[in-house]
Image (cartoon, rainbow, N blue to C red; front, side, top):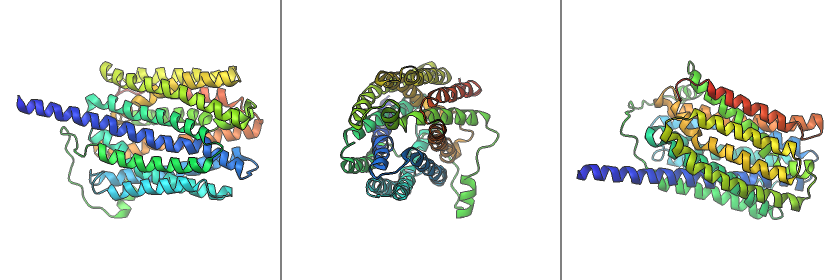
Length: 417
């Protein structure tokens, strides 16, 4: 009895560490990223006199996403070699945090578009060196029965961090230098808190084969070999990519949408964004504390994801049908709730469809490519639509159609309820 009690207490303490570690990391990392990506970097492009900031923002986002694609998959595969993602991989992880912090801060220094582009690319290398090993721990350290709850902490942290980051970015819209420095600090603290809080022990119910040392070329080839003959994996990939494309089409351009589409001034845009951020933060927090545990309780992921897609599509329609600040507030509330629900079970779904748990880091790296690809494609679609039509109006119905693709792809998954 004593042993059982001790074991139960250890599990409870580890679960607390998983929830707090993933949650705090996600909040801090996404706060820093969205301070820059959603507000400070778009504003910086305007401040340095870029003639077409909309097109350059799309190019910068695409370049960062392509780099993230390769770094995420490669680092995820490297972390699979030892299963010691926070031991022998500590130099990778801490150097990634430092590189991301320095590079994101330097985005505020260049006075040319190419300077901003280069700093953003290096920043994406750093943040993917951080995130790839952390995401893989969901597979080899979190028990299946608690995976939805821990995924909710991570996904909820992402959505809350996005809201907080956008809010803080709007506060620094007239003091971008201070904003870039604050965002850099977020990356340092994200790395430290994750390293301190997350348990180091692997799950007791799975065993890994002894890792064999391989040449660098074999590691690279293995890293970029996708898991073929895994249809559920690729349906989840399509779902995640599509929803992030739709999300990026709006969120990455919300400053320009408010200023150029709604005709608001720089000061009013900052106020609207700050209010949207508070709304999104509230609904995202509500989603994170309910959706993940609810998914674990009913033992289902698909209905939760489909509901999230429906809410997100409805939210996107609001600024299209009501082109005003009110429409943007409704978007923040409805779409924010849908996106928060999706993110709360996203990582749990990704782990559930893995074809081989031994390659969790590598395969989750491919699923994380969905985020990178989604950011690049979403920015590219919005930039192209605005360039060809000189209007943001077509962006909203196109984003709704892409959200519907996400929902249909999740329906086809066979191995997950």
